[in-house]
Image 1 (cartoon, one colour):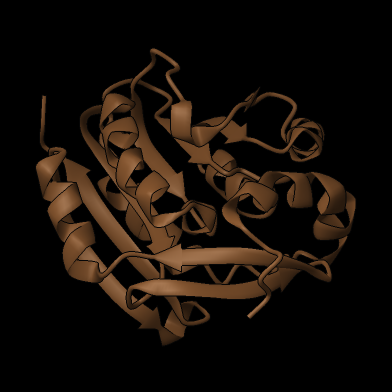
Image 2 (cartoon, rainbow, N blue to C red):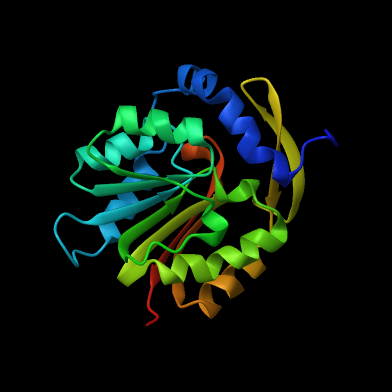
Length: 207
């Protein structure tokens, strides 16, 4: 356990290592099949379809892939240096330096993605994100996020710096999704075809 790494350290850490992260981040898009599932259910409320990328990082390769497939990307990251790199990668996209936990853009999106970002929040902060997801969901919007496959806290590293991860129990995620107007369409714990990521896909059926 790396005790010095806490949820409060996440944004300063990613701000510090942004350039190294960009250099080290694999461009092999092992996420492609999952992203294609997201694209497949995202509604066409407007054209181009709008995607909210929470914890967008540098914008490559995920946001770039989705942009190349015609989505209008809005990236949000709490690390200022990540946002600057995102703007360089996708100059036509919209980018916000903001904390996802308190986000209120006043705009609905056809798809919401929190890939390898949401799980850096504390358990209580993760619980608080589901109303944020719902607030930004257009009718029938697709929501995809990654989590742990079981509840608990673990510590990893990014660009040599320790980072915190947490997950709720899958049953609690299901309850939070249902309670905030989402229908679970797909749950793939430790998907071997996606580098063993645990992936949730849901549709917003609320109002």
